[in-house]
Image (cartoon, rainbow, N blue to C red; front, top):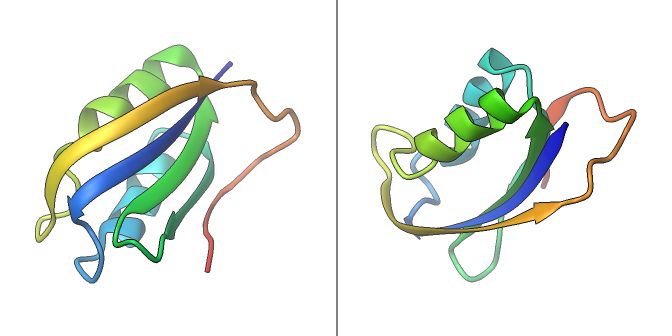
Length: 90
Protein backbone atom coordinates (compact mmCIF):
# COMPACT_ATOMS: atom_id res chain seq x y z
CA UNK A 1 0.00 0.00 0.00
CA UNK A 2 1.36 3.40 -1.02
CA UNK A 3 -0.04 6.93 -0.47
CA UNK A 4 1.01 10.10 -2.30
CA UNK A 5 0.21 13.75 -1.65
CA UNK A 6 0.41 15.82 -4.86
CA UNK A 7 0.00 19.47 -5.82
CA UNK A 8 -0.59 20.14 -9.51
CA UNK A 9 0.39 23.51 -11.02
CA UNK A 10 -0.68 25.10 -14.28
CA UNK A 11 -4.06 25.61 -15.90
CA UNK A 12 -5.84 23.03 -13.76
CA UNK A 13 -8.97 24.77 -12.46
CA UNK A 14 -12.12 25.21 -14.51
CA UNK A 15 -10.96 22.53 -16.96
CA UNK A 16 -12.54 19.39 -15.42
CA UNK A 17 -9.24 18.37 -13.81
CA UNK A 18 -10.83 17.23 -10.54
CA UNK A 19 -13.56 15.24 -12.29
CA UNK A 20 -11.07 13.58 -14.63
CA UNK A 21 -8.79 12.81 -11.67
CA UNK A 22 -11.74 11.17 -9.90
CA UNK A 23 -12.50 9.03 -12.96
CA UNK A 24 -8.85 7.99 -13.34
CA UNK A 25 -8.55 7.13 -9.64
CA UNK A 26 -11.66 4.97 -9.83
CA UNK A 27 -10.31 3.14 -12.89
CA UNK A 28 -7.14 2.39 -10.93
CA UNK A 29 -9.04 1.38 -7.75
CA UNK A 30 -7.36 4.15 -5.73
CA UNK A 31 -8.80 5.82 -2.65
CA UNK A 32 -8.23 9.40 -1.53
CA UNK A 33 -9.40 12.84 -2.59
CA UNK A 34 -8.83 15.83 -4.87
CA UNK A 35 -9.64 19.54 -4.38
CA UNK A 36 -9.00 23.02 -5.77
CA UNK A 37 -6.85 25.39 -3.72
CA UNK A 38 -7.28 29.17 -3.56
CA UNK A 39 -3.93 29.74 -5.31
CA UNK A 40 -5.15 28.06 -8.52
CA UNK A 41 -3.49 24.70 -7.95
CA UNK A 42 -5.11 21.31 -7.43
CA UNK A 43 -4.20 19.18 -4.41
CA UNK A 44 -4.76 15.44 -4.18
CA UNK A 45 -3.96 12.44 -2.05
CA UNK A 46 -4.33 8.96 -3.43
CA UNK A 47 -3.41 5.49 -2.28
CA UNK A 48 -3.49 1.95 -3.48
CA UNK A 49 -1.10 -0.69 -4.71
CA UNK A 50 2.28 0.51 -5.94
CA UNK A 51 1.58 -0.12 -9.64
CA UNK A 52 -1.73 1.79 -9.58
CA UNK A 53 -0.16 4.72 -7.72
CA UNK A 54 2.64 4.78 -10.29
CA UNK A 55 0.14 4.86 -13.13
CA UNK A 56 -1.67 7.77 -11.46
CA UNK A 57 1.60 9.66 -11.07
CA UNK A 58 2.27 9.12 -14.79
CA UNK A 59 -1.23 10.37 -15.63
CA UNK A 60 -1.19 13.58 -13.52
CA UNK A 61 1.10 15.60 -15.84
CA UNK A 62 -1.32 14.94 -18.72
CA UNK A 63 -4.49 15.66 -16.74
CA UNK A 64 -7.78 16.50 -18.41
CA UNK A 65 -8.06 17.35 -22.09
CA UNK A 66 -8.37 21.09 -21.41
CA UNK A 67 -5.71 21.30 -18.68
CA UNK A 68 -2.11 22.40 -19.10
CA UNK A 69 0.05 21.04 -16.29
CA UNK A 70 3.30 22.89 -15.61
CA UNK A 71 4.57 20.72 -12.77
CA UNK A 72 3.54 18.20 -10.14
CA UNK A 73 5.02 18.22 -6.65
CA UNK A 74 4.64 14.92 -4.85
CA UNK A 75 5.44 13.49 -1.45
CA UNK A 76 5.01 9.98 -0.11
CA UNK A 77 2.83 9.69 3.00
CA UNK A 78 1.75 7.03 5.45
CA UNK A 79 -1.28 5.08 4.15
CA UNK A 80 -4.65 5.68 5.77
CA UNK A 81 -6.06 2.23 6.39
CA UNK A 82 -9.81 1.87 6.06
CA UNK A 83 -10.15 4.60 3.43
CA UNK A 84 -12.20 3.02 0.67
CA UNK A 85 -13.25 5.61 -1.91
CA UNK A 86 -11.93 8.52 -3.91
CA UNK A 87 -13.86 11.80 -3.59
CA UNK A 88 -13.81 15.41 -4.71
CA UNK A 89 -13.47 17.70 -1.70
CA UNK A 90 -15.09 21.14 -1.75
